[in-house]
Length: 123
Image (cartoon, rainbow, N blue to C red; front, side, top):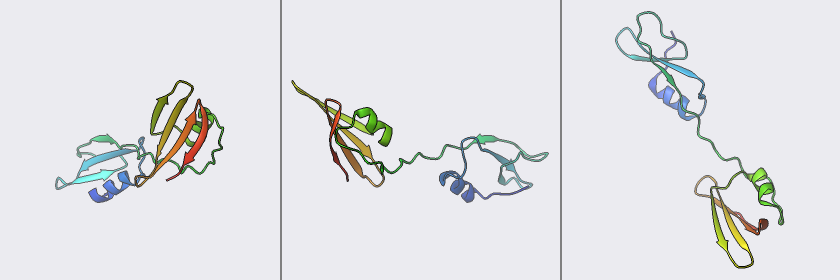
């Protein structure tokens, strides 16, 4: 039986090595200690089957270049859905500010007027 220490299990889960479909078995050793294993526990061992959480999704770098005049759909295909959208309605136009959230509180802003890209502000 392969033994995995508790701290290694935490590292395994938080580092994204384990995936949502990976089974982790918590077994009891001869002296009642917990043993984490990828295979079912042996005879006379308590079994608890848990599902590891999915690794956090990290936004891909927005390296795909945008061009002024692109549509909202074209921007979404390249950069994905924004973190937030702020709309301003005027008599002759609809202005939108799309906020893309990166790591370390980084924010990039994309501006549209009537569905067409008018400017880009990179943080």
